Image 1: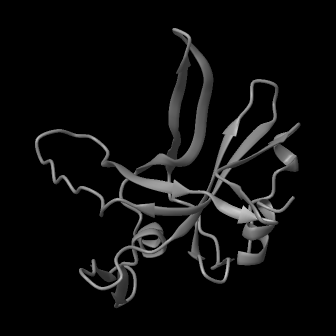
Image 2: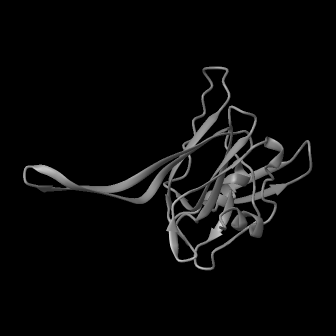
Image 3: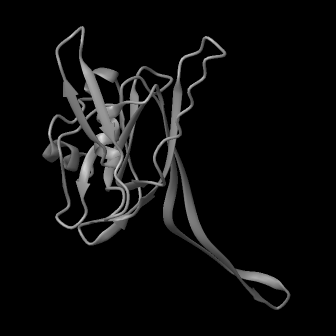
Length: 182
């Protein structure tokens, strides 16, 4: 994930979600059928955007700083360190971010799925469950919009790599943007 400035088409320093689990992309289309002579004569299907769902183990506050604009403050040193995370309300709302998810292929390679312009729908749900011995898993939903590359709107970029060793995670905002380049 990387913070995205939609006006300048630039990214901040990428971060990885701690214990990332899923990046689910569900494209949405406007569809229509043109009737004529008692049958359907033409079809229309235009990609508008995509619902996204991001799942991870726990709630990663560095991830939330990028995707939800939260502020993190720490004090003291280990083993007495404390963190305070504040979730802002009002104002301009949640920030834009870019997402790249990685998944293995069945032949030893990997596929990287990238979405340039995303926003969360809301802050993650917190559940403090003292009844069972389970890891805290979080899922956050949002939406991805198409972004122009060389004057053409693209919703999603998928790159496949024959071997996992060929994939290099973006280390800078410029590297993150280069993932989407032609």
